[in-house]
Length: 65
Image (cartoon, rainbow, N blue to C red):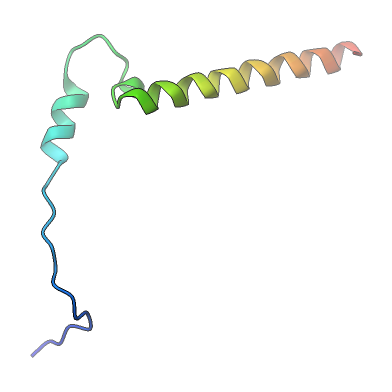
């Protein structure tokens, strides 16, 4: 017989994969990297801002400023 080391009961989690598949496969005109919601949009904008800032800073340093 197998013994379990955990003394707490196991809770079943709902399978969310079909819901996420529907969300990401929906033809709503959004690119897949923005279909996750508000946080995806914020992370995308933050990444673009950091990229633009770094590129501008790099060009300024290369030009001698």
